[in-house]
Image (tube, rainbow, N blue to C red):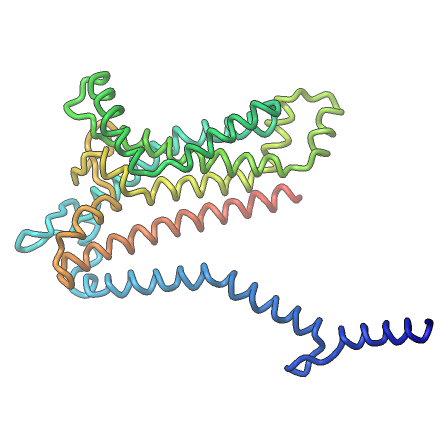
Length: 316
């Protein structure tokens, strides 16, 4: 029996360490294979981003060869006239106005909702609020746009005595509702991830629950909260359908929330279908896409740099 057991163990060990087809032990070969697979999967997003960059810049390059870059930041967008004008400044300002208005509304409400769910709400209430936020996140953008067009725009028009309800304010409110689930859900995850020992230590020295939330939990989760705001900002900046339906799509230079505006995404969606393939107008629309992509990446990188500073300061 002992010999058989020893032989069994010896066979088992030999099976585990037997060479594979590549001349390596099976365990080491599996580890290396796992590393390769994980590397490929993690690189997929970078590869996709690189391909998107390449495609957009390739299609926008003919425009920049024929039109000076400064022309893109002029005030008049009339690509069908002769000579055409490709001033995207009204659309850039329109995107900035609508996005800023949405963040002013959604960030405080989203962070407050996250703090309530993570720190205050009891079990059943927490489940109800989390389910409501998830439902808001699952609603298609065209439904938000239809609601804004049929309900919110007439309401704002009659309440504020406006010539039209399809304004930047309507777009900002709709985008705020659309960005709210992203901000609240990710911020709630960041607050929940703070170790319970932080809260217990704060309460042990006599701090109230509000003081613990404001001075302990929120600073500890600041990097995650900033990440939630970044993704919410990206959600608002990149939205197309809802903004196209409720902002009026007027390429005028204004920073007022009470006037119609056109965003970069709406401008691309409106004109791409009617633009001849390969024309200067076609490449100009891709230049708008490249500009939007660079603006979004610039804001994300700036926010990530600031988030890194917060993490390093918290670790000290």
